[in-house]
Length: 291
DNA sequence: ATGGTAGGTATCCTA
Image (cartoon, rainbow, N blue to C red):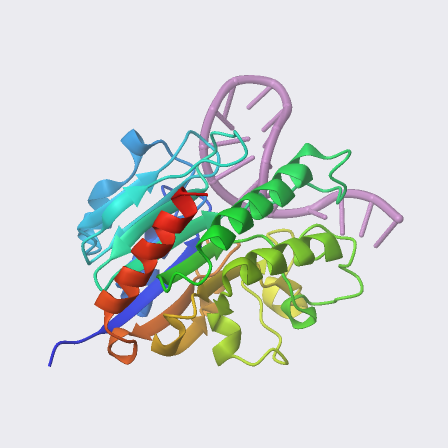
């Protein structure tokens, strides 16, 4: 019988070029079929393609720029329909969309960190963060109910739950956990009815972090983390969810990123015939175009 | 309460 299991991992790698050893170990230990990276910090022409191919990823989709941001999808499976949308009239490389076999539409997203001051009137970086979230929400709201098999993942730079930060009260006015951001993230999630795959597996009552500052003397001992990296599924794909993991141990690797990988495992045999979903989606796309 | 580290780039920006 044909295997329908799919392991998809997201990781803010904080420079793909300096992370070769950690990248090799992550792929060896996690064995993702699809590895989505953020903060690659490299132009496409200088991306380490040979390393990616050596790790078994023969399908590589990059959208990078010099020094800042940058996203990449490394895949063992063919990628089709690749696009790198831009938002808010900003040329940053922060979003990729592509299709995996099984009609799975993958969105690799890197939301702006937002700077230090949580006020959009005085801080343009915070304004940009909120604007990109609302622009994405508007785009997905237009498609709501189209039955697509969506995965939206990446560094969303927001920790929405009280248990997603080491101290809820202390972080209420710290960018990444302010009520205005949490509300903006909630609106994006609700725009299409996305399911938080990680919290569907690991209960919200459990403290869970994906990022620890480089500035701590001992990140593991102080454990002042935040859950900034997420994997969401559309309602049509949610029944395929069979597992989710946060790879905390990766923060303890030599020369680590400050973020750790997050993985979901999907079993596409658990979702309905994709031909039916495709028909619904095409009908909905026509509706949106005519508006 | 403050400042702490890391990566890329080219001397300071971003996270």
